[in-house]
Figure 1 (cartoon, rainbow, N blue to C red):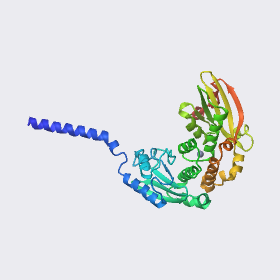
Figure 2 (cartoon, helix red, strand yellow; figure 1 turned 30 degrees about the horizontal axis):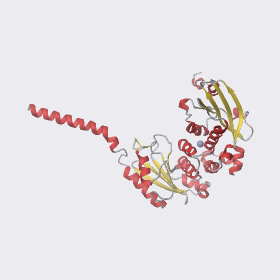
Figure 3 (cartoon, rainbow, N blue to C red; figure 1 turned 135 degrees about the vertical axis):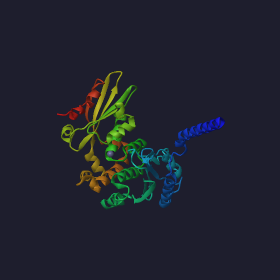
Length: 359
Ligand SMILES: [Zn+2]
């Protein structure tokens, strides 16, 4: 009896050990979950439909793999699945992970630049649904074309992100600008202006040893995301501050047709100095050069109106394809200033708690 008990004890211990080992090992052994074959099948079928083969003529793959979720699990493994199935890679600028919220379902898009055909694949429960879109600018960037595409599973917001990045990618923008768009989750004129400002600063207010940029975005807009990516000047490291300010309050500093881009401050902590510039973006000129009208950017009914989205995609595409000199030419130095290092924090200071106190 005693021997039998001991054997049972040993077997139990072994089972427990194996169980523990299995639990520890399983995330690595099947990082995809049960949906892998369906995801692979959706990608392969879409490539066949678009007439593209792994390793052939360039096409772009976008995905929120690594950010989004599938069945409540994280999706980083699907970045490798997308690369393995399509042959696209980050190193060839043909696979970009697009930043989304962690609770957004996993999705992929494929875009073929020569035919402008685009496919959007998204997980819905355990399945994958597919939508084909004619992304030719003459079709998609019309009110009817946009409305039709946005009424599918992709929806307005995700169509904006996928179409703006895909169509602008075809213009071969600089890599830092592509990276910024992937972080910002879309291409827009404002993000472009942040990239222009970054390049402008590299030329006109370059950093030397021991110096770093501090940015103040007031109001806090798209340009702030470009500089956070390009200089690793993140909000969490006191690199970029976003502030709210009413149009009537900033307008007095800027000339007609120019809006705030960024306040850029070069700080030298050791020398206790800073040098700053208020940069404005000449949107009036940018509208003229790209043929997009200011009214299209703020149409009746706002985002309910397809013009709101199509004008932004059109303008991003055109701005991103311009030579760097022209891009930087849209920036205006509205104000220059200098002082002690602490001035940077002073520029960014405010009291947000004031409004939270019960009166
Ligand atoms: Zn934006």
